[in-house]
Each structure stands twice: as C-alpha cells, then as structure tokens.
Amino acid sequence: MLELVFFMLAAIAVISALGVIVVRDVFRAALCLILLFMAVAGVYLLLHADFLAIVQILIYVGAVSILIIVAIMLTRDARKGQPLGNLKYLAGIVSLLLLGVVAYGVINAGFTISATPPVEPTVGPLGEKLFGDAGYLLVIEIAAVLLLSAMLGAIAILREK
Amino acid sequence: MLTAILTLSLQHYLILSAIIFCIGIFGVITQRNVIKVIMCLEIMLNAVNIALIAFSQYIVPVALTGQIFAIFVMVVAAAEVAVGIAIIFSVYRNRESVDMENFNILKW
Image (cartoon, rainbow over all chains, first blue to last red; front, side, top):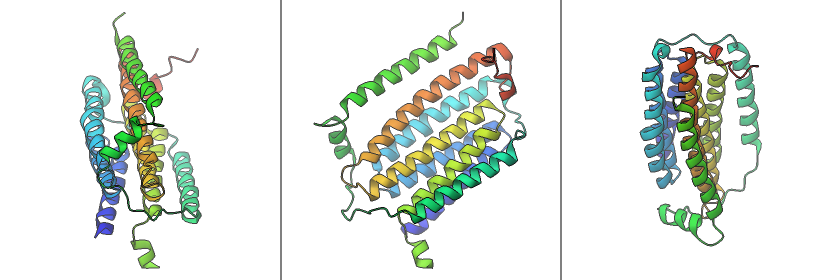
C-alpha cells in the first residue's frame, strides 16, 4: 500500500519537475512547481517527517511560490516563454551522466539501516534536539542573522536610488 | 527481483531525489528565463531535502540529524529566493528583460 503511494507521489513529482522545464508559459510552470512542492510534502509524510511536511507546505507552497508568482506578474515579457538555450544536448548528457553515477553509487553502497522504529510525532523531539543541551543553538542564531541580512539585502537592492 | 524493487527502501528515496536533482540541473543550465532558473534551483534544493530526510529516517531515526539539516536547507532556500528575486527586479529595472542574455552587468 505504502509502495503504491510512494510510486504515485514519485510519478507526480518527476512529471511536474519535467513540466517546470518543458512548459513554455512561465505562470503554468510556476503552477507545476507548486504541484512538485505538494508531492515532495507527501514524500516527507511517507518518511514520518510530519513537521517538515507542514513546514514544506507553509514555506514553499505558501511563501516561495507566491514570491515567484509575484516576480512573474511584475516582469513584463516573462509570460510568453522562450525555447531552451543552445546548451540543451550538453546539459542533457551531463545530467544523465550524473544521474547514472549517483544511481550506481546508491544501489551499490552498503548503508547500515537502523532497526529502531522512527519517532512518530517529530515536533517535540525536533525541538528538543534543536534547542536542548548539545543542540544547535549557535546554528539557529546564525540562521536568524542570515534571514535578517537577506531581508535587509533584498530591501537595499530594490531601493530606488 | 520484482519484490525487491517494489518493497520500499532507502534506495527508492535516494534515486527519486537523484532524478529530481538531475532535472533541476538540466533546467538551470538550459533555461533562458531567469525566473525559471530560480524555480529549477528550488527543485534541486527540494531533491536534496528528500535525500536528507530519507537518510535521517533510515539511518538515524532517533537522532533526527537529517531533518534538522533539512530545516536549515529550507532557511537558506528562503533567503536565497528573497535575494534572488530582488536581484531579478533590479536588473529588470535597468534592462527591461528577464532573459539570461541580458544578465551580464558584472562582466567588466
């Protein structure tokens, strides 16, 4: 049963990722991107990462896609779309080669799978791991500074001279 | 053989992540619209998150290290989109275009 769900989600994700590239109209490509984000959130749920699935929907489906759609709306000739650049054969060969190498490595690597069952509601354990002793407090501070500087940078870049 | 392929394992998620990542790389190289390039970057970041969470689930299911890394990847992705779209707007203001051909202001 879970396998069926996984393969359906994987098919939706791969097809919508291809759609982002193939669809000429940029707005429809953005809608394909939203579908991809939803499918990835479903994959997270299959992996028992409930908090991250919700965060994925909040941040990517809610915020990032809105930013991208606003960017499409505000740039004039963006809607009509263009053909692929002249690098497409080289890019296809490079990405297929990379996919082959990674797939070969993944299939032949001997991962030591842990036998313990996963923690089911991950919100509490994630909070304890992030903010508890020997946690990631410094990294969280750095992430906060990064977000603040990104916000100030975006404002500074866009300000009228 | 078929049941080995059909039962869900870590490799399934990693290969799904690799496929989506390679689609993203293809898009980043070939697209000529800058907004589409940013969309393909987001695809690549999502693929990386799938791999991180799959590793977290199958190898360290209690320590949850991969999920914590995925949270920070999301933070960096949000910052990257905000700054990237600001740069697109500021170039668009000067050049009236979102084609990659016109994003050559940093060339001497």
